[in-house]
Length: 277
Image (cartoon, rainbow, N blue to C red; front, side, top):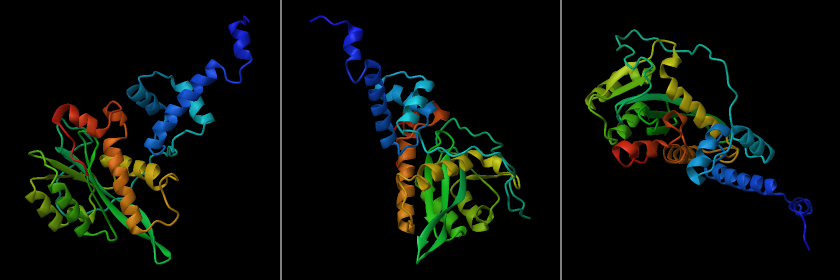
């Protein structure tokens, strides 16, 4: 019995277009599941192309992701506000980095900061302090320490972590002017490792913009992500989550600054295997 193609498809519950949409949604779901629902439509197009060799326009991605509940956990854009800083009377080096947030080789230009990560213990919330170091060559997190106290020991522990990562000759470490980084013990330890310190200008968080950006990304994609978080996470649970996210960020998450490659893949192109945290 001869039926026209249009008549045949009209008799089916699922059309060819619907099948394509379902297949696309399945691939998007696979990406989001492996990336903890952190991929927005712009990066999704690049990831689909790299993983599956398919090209999809942003309009289609936005429509499918919205209708199928596959959108990323994206924070709202906020207007820039002046950032509080800690002035110091010490004679400190200038802002040697000067907002040049890039490097031509690994472990040469590094940025560091401490951000607040809460945890629940003894029936109440407490602040934990996460110290991080980022490599501007490929935006990888190359050292991190989570602590219950924010003092110079946290900074020294971070430097100890960093010391095993293979610093480039003449490496620079940029930070704000917080008490950890201006403490003589920290400065001596950094100098002993061959690190040249660079400091943001007073009350100017934009001088350390890439580190501030990562802090926000970490909180949105991991700490505030319902796929990953607990209602009342312990200190250990937060520490484990941070480690899991850093591993994902370095080795699985595409970064738009390096052509939507992962930090590990970007380094591999030029310098061989990435040192895992």
